[in-house]
Length: 515
Image (cartoon, rainbow, N blue to C red; front, side, top):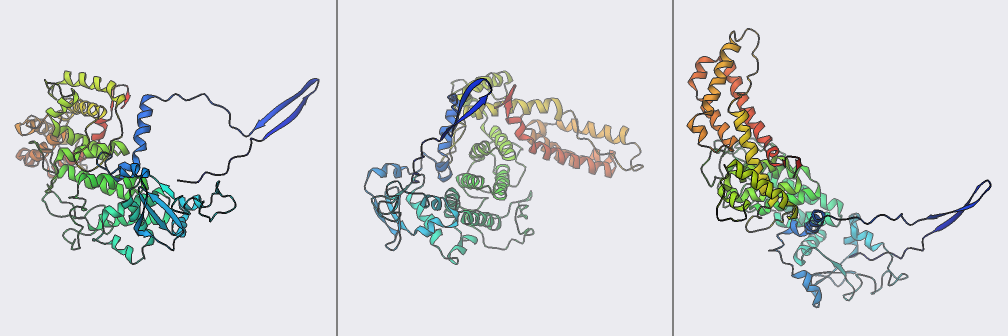
């Protein structure tokens, strides 16, 4: 879209004569041309990553398969003037798709934007006249052509650039159109409208943090959000709320994907952290498709299944290397898919392999490790069904199953959480009494039917079940001192939290390195 700069002059060369005594004068050529390098050999995997990165702009705005790509083909047809933003008094013509926009150059050039740099470049066609019709953007026949956004998206950008300050106040209230604000934030960042981009992304964070419904606690009651900038106390959230389609707790996974992508591109850590926290809460809180006890948070009614939520989250967490979201998403995906994971791993083979069959899991994982080099590592986001799992992601799920099952077999069901030592003199028989009783109670809970009804790899479900049993255990009430019992149960809660925080480590690699 930029005008090319003036051709570079011929490379400057200087010859220096250096005398070396009896030796003849040695001419040395100093050139401004960079030294030649060997041609770089691009691997197949790098080519795939390059191709996938080219679609980043379209990914942020929607699914390439469902997105309207007609603007690319529309350059072959005659452009028409936009009814709203073709202004006769303006001085710069821009073409997006099949629409011509005539806008004021000073608006595009403000805020140290990319347009300002483009306007300051000399014109090859008309070096002595920078305001004539031959100048790029000077007429309908020679417009500035923009790629990567649709006509509607560019109209939204212009609406923000032409808006009065009072009109922009709507983007800071519960009546905010989050989809429009996302487009404004993304495009102002793309074209380097620095202060406008900062305003848009900050407004987006404020609206989503302040006006989304509060998360639910274990009893299903609203609580104060730890990420809310106002720290509104529980049951005091008597404010207007966003519509359900924009509320972080009830919106579609597609919107979560777009918000996360825009926040990462704009470098807004608070917004990406807010979305990650709410998405983790949604993954734990969505009613499970299959029986299980890993549902540790209160449920919120939603039209999206836990499996779909998890697949969306897997694609985003892998794209942006988000450790916490990645661990929970892969874990929930593993719990939900069941036999479907075996069929996917085998390429929809007729005879599915059980996910509990360790030998089969190892065989499938090693096969997919080789196949993953030919898969795209970047999954596009959009409305509709979630993106399918890549061979690489399927391999991670299979290896995660093995890792979690190994964790249970070798550590969790045998080694009880360590009780912190008591104050001197407060527990006379701590080592022989409290520690021994606590270890025995832990192992008994690990072997109970309530615990074993969860799958071997469902370590979160099993440990949560054990926590409930130990909390209600009469044996611990009688045999442990109140202080030791309280510290033991706190150690279990810390164990659960540590397991959740480390889930991502079980889905990240294979023997010999990370995938």
